[in-house]
Length: 90
Image (cartoon, rainbow, N blue to C red; front, top):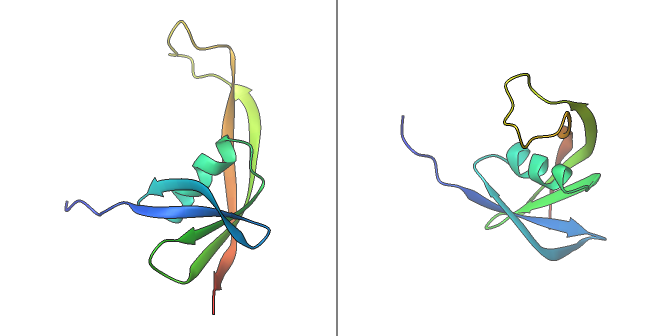
């Protein structure tokens, strides 16, 4: 399988770019990274295009896997996202 290049997604707040950039192959992966850091209203502008991917994100406190390493606690945070749509900048 051919390697797909990673894309850079810039986190937007209040309609403006921030200096927070997430690199991933797909926008959902970048949104999961943003949600794991506590962002809830996630707007990611794909660099090099005029597309803005809009997500709703949250974290849930869940039980850790049974075969976890000894340093991992019993409960861990799991990020979840739901895509709201794509907007196009003019």
